[in-house]
Length: 92
Image (cartoon, rainbow, N blue to C red):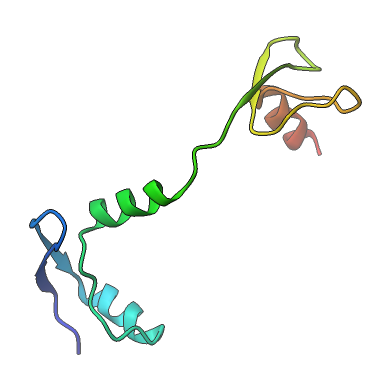
């Protein structure tokens, strides 16, 4: 029913393909308009809207290494580096 369409990105002017599968997805969600930007420009626009997270440095409670976390560490709660956190998750 649907066929691939070649569209032109309104932001960068590059051609991109609006596939039959994407068209079917849009229709299933009730979207009536075709995309106006290519995937790269859509992703860039999405990421520009997000605020960059402030990262905090802490000492890992398991290995003593440096851990970067997106929250302000508190003295009463342990903080783990990514590797130790992943190991703890696997152990559960």
